[in-house]
Image 1: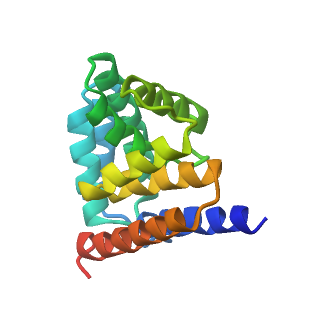
Image 2: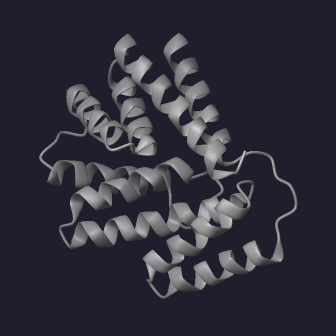
Image 3: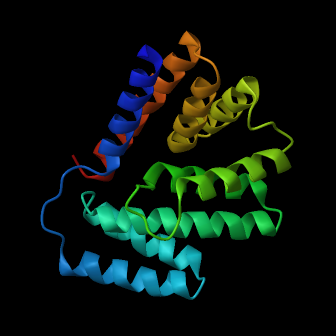
Length: 186
């Protein structure tokens, strides 16, 4: 029970880093989000991702932009995977999972998890292996991909409770918090 509470706290904290309670969103951010949705519908995922990143950079409280970023990252990750660009696909699927909320009507957690597991398998790793998930988290951490590290360490901990991985997860959360402070200009 303690372990499930720990994971729930980690998830809540990680979401609060980029999706805090909101202020008023500017018209410019709303327009960027709307333009990004058009780009998603046109399957121009890199452009949509760029627009959504700009909107979130200007207004870190803009939850709809973050949800749309989860969608754009998911479809771009799948597109990259279909082209055999698995390492880059992994990063986008990690970020999709990170920003995904239950309110997202276009994609489900299961569909992102399935795509993520498929990419992990194509990278020669076992998505149900504690050691492989820790290894993927370590690889993400080494490249300062804190979202990827967070996602992989959480998956590892869902397989096996391990104090060393909890410390790694805590470190990734601290780094994400620092990134958020820089990202939001504080």
